[in-house]
Image (cartoon, rainbow, N blue to C red; front, side, top):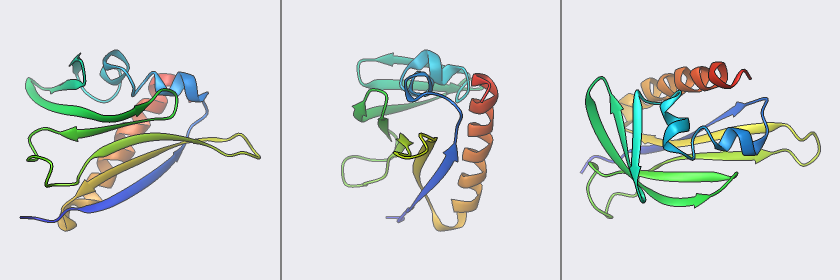
Length: 129
């Protein structure tokens, strides 16, 4: 079994936590910046890119705070990988940051980070942040 490395990236975003959460806590929000189309049936989300589909299960959700997904094609519960969007607000400055947590194989970590940078740039353009 290939071991994946966990990594986190922090992106400052000029938006309220409630507004920001709408863009990753719902299929319609995710469709605006993350995938060509996103559908959900309960806790199973289907992400569509260029006609290819991937499914992920919602593992944990706290509205206006975070949502954690697990790709269904990555085996059963034995593999502890997931991807998560989490909002953090600095108590003093009230600055909002989006924390993205993901896993990648060691030789793919830099490519994965570049993917997330591009996706979050698209999110920022979408929300005007």
